[in-house]
Length: 251
Image (cartoon, rainbow, N blue to C red; front, side, top):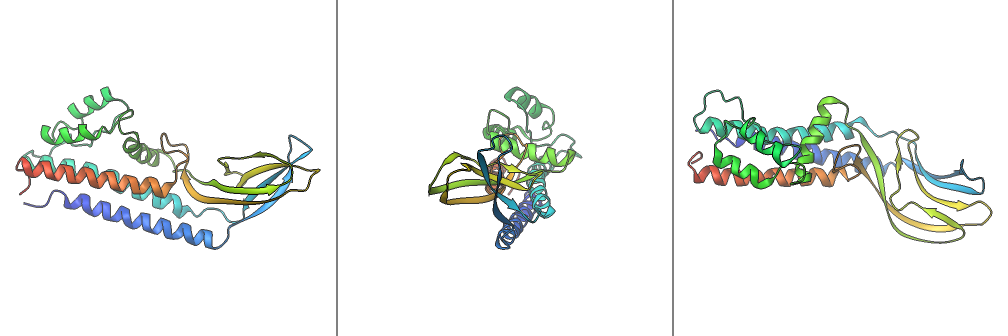
């Protein structure tokens, strides 16, 4: 009997390749020093000035493309194993073998009884244990949200930053704890200072690519989230394979 998990394993391996390529391209992007600091007057307060980072290079489309492809492979890995296990259980051309993501616990139960009804109940019990619905395992549920977003529109990726140590002297008015990326201007505002006082500071911060406008993972580091997606999908497959062996679907 063919290994019902082989197709899913290949998709996970492909997702890992895309994630590795994304990390490499991001590091190369940073190595080229794509941004520089600048100061401009605060349009809302004449006595203040804004200290920012401006990016002189746009983000490559490959960042979003590699993210999309990684997520689609991982999402597909979960659906593929459901179909393969339904076949292993003796179903002929099964139609209802989806991995049951849902927007709530009630919708999840309905999805198991509907979109997953051709999958053996013992396997569906494993699905239930992982709670792939909003209000259950929200990050696992977000995997499906990212995949859905990709199907309907271009996935938006932003550059985000996180401040570390800040030391300085002068009239610091305001500092952004979580500096916000302005995709239109290709810049990040770091802090606001008074124009009539000298200011000197040393600031540590990190830059990362982040999801934009996606529930649960919006604003979170793309690479960290993708690695979690890989981890949880691999864990689910191990649990499914263990159960499949126990009930005799896999020898």
